[in-house]
Length: 511
View 1 (cartoon, rainbow, N blue to C red):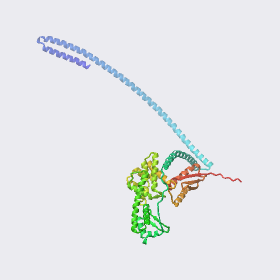
View 2: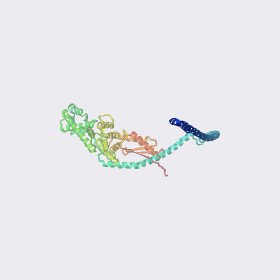
View 3: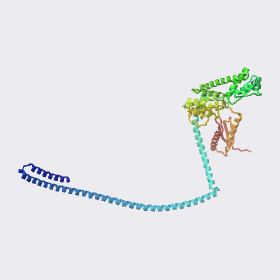
View 4: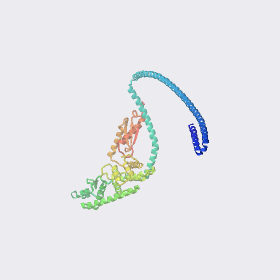
């Protein structure tokens, strides 16, 4: 609208300017006509401008009226919405007030019920106490005694159920595991044909006659002193006919002394210079034997690339025995058994054989170095760059550390199999008797044991229990506890069978 007004005014101004220019450009003769024309044009422009102005004013008024109407309509609508919202708020407040009243009534009711419950609890406690007193009076037992009685019954049920579960689990595991284990072990033993009855170290030298004893002793004992000084071995010459006993902890030195003494006896010339010469020859001979035996052992076991110093230590095991079993033959057998079982299980055969062959390496020098042979063997193998797997197999073969590889477990099993073969090891009578006595002592230390007998050279112990004190389900637990105590307190090769027997007899006499 304003634009139209401006357009009208602009048209008027343009008309005036046009008239002025026309009047200016025409001659003086036409000024009057031009003025009249200009006046008419101005008048026309004024009339058009007034008309346009009125039109514009009307349009503006109509627009203002339209906007006012719309604004009033919008205000009415907002007012209605506000009224509706106000009514909803009022309704909600009324609803909240009603709910608040209901909650207050419920709280009052709940308080009453809580009080009633508390009163009833008090009554129940009184009734319970009176019933407990009445039960104690009727049963002649206090509540603590009744509780202990119930707990005993529950313990018996739990022991029975657990015994059944243990038995079922053990039977299932044995059916699956024992079958496979027996197959693998029997296959390994059948394939390994190593000698298990090993010869012991010779400590007695036979003499051709008793006159040789005097020549060995020499004038004022110089010959025997020279031999003992050079070999580090004690010579025992007593009343034993035609024999000299060699005594010493080092088996290699004892072998050197034996060879040297036998050479001197054959030669017949026994004096300090000759003794020194023969001892040197015996040392060289024993060194050659040790090296050859070590190389042969590695070859027999199928283990290659062993350090020459370890080969020499292996050879020294030829002169070392353990419970009467030759340690070198035992090591070769363990290597074979471990390798065969590793092949059956898909483990590393080379590592199993290598660890099996070197597992008792520490026994070659355990007379010279302090400490258990396991630690000595690990240190020696580590010094000559053996792998971590082989070191672990050596360290774990007696259970000093927990086996972490299949090969270590196989070496441990092969060591036990080789040592447990019938006739593989012997022990002194005193040690044997003490072990049997200790076995029976462990069994008799448990409650409910009537008698126990160690049989089969200590491989089995039969235990008779008192049937009135030990039930059938308790027998399983008793056997397991005895096994645990035997494993904790006794050292023994192989395994010991614990056989628990419960026998009930009914005896009557006919008269």
